[in-house]
Image 1 (cartoon, rainbow, N blue to C red):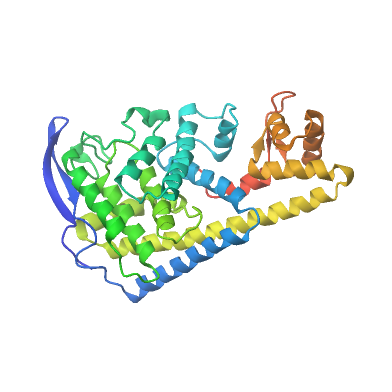
Image 2 (image 1 turned 90 degrees about the vertical axis):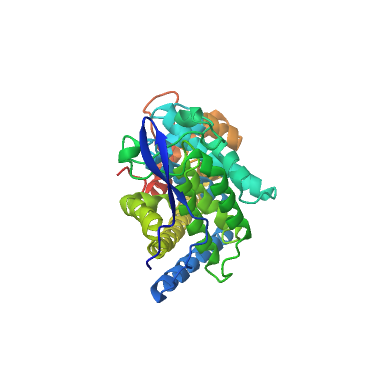
Length: 390
């Protein structure tokens, strides 16, 4: 649908030149969204897939273990979009207080993402709605270490920024000047908490799609806006009751379609084409939810298959079962960590790992006689699907 520009331009002067910054109009879009049959059907498919994903979290026996790892998968993907080189294995090694295979700043940024999501969920469980305070607190955790730690964590920006290009004059997009941010965020907070939408089956998805784009347009922080904007997708869906567990993450889809994603953001801002953005967002939700369901099923099948192997190992079965269950919680581990977690003696852990290696369940990463690190290889491989750098 053709609309007027979805906001207004203001002239700014920064870094020695004049440029035009864009201030978005408050939500909801005016005129309202035009629901074609195709767009409505896509939203319905997305919502059904989201419901199946939410349902599987109550059915699988080790949902908390899968959630633990899936959050870390998303942290890696979201940080990859921002240019970090850390892998899922690097993150898990870092969390064991071992040295990862990439610069510490990279893996620390990924670790902060996990902590930021967990902090947001805790705030929600304590009764805090999605609001400016929550955004600032989650942002403070997100940038609490690594390269972003000097870019005013938890504080909205006081200087102008821009996206793409070497200066505002050749930037792809110049977000609102600092003086406009308080009002823009207040309007966004009001929309999140007070606008009921249509209260049909797809309304939480509609609200989430609109809020994500609006937040990215406001770009209220000096750094971390992309990561926080993607975190808000999961937090809003959880707040709206569409997800019991934070299992939906769109970073892989956004990474795969990165150029089109940015093109659509600008089409909304300049042409008011909300419908194309909503079609893309609903496609992302449907694809991602179905992929997450497939991943959960593969992990369950692997766990059950390996548990059956372990159960047939005679007198060693009991200790091997403890090791296998510990590796489901932490699929990269040291013998010392496994001894602590299982209560087994170091000798029993060592013998058990050798047996699991013979069964093809674990692999040793270092090749050393001391300081060894073991990986539950097939488990990591399933989670790593789609994590490859472009």
